[in-house]
Picture 1: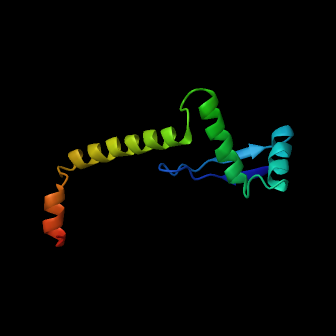
Picture 2: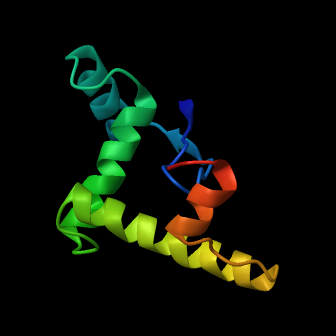
Length: 99
């Protein structure tokens, strides 16, 4: 049995995974054959493979775009909740002395 801590892209979700039996053996073989360097990489690849298999996304690029869009929505909501606003390109250049 082993434990894997997993950091996942934008959300930095930490997950503990316990495995034994056939799944653990498959994981060890994938590492021994050099397909992956770490157990965390194997787990991430498996999760992404399942996402693709079940139609959550069709490519890793599509998944990344979806995650970025979700984060932008969250950030926009946070900014509105705090009463702040985005600066225009012109305002940023003026504020920070860019030409």
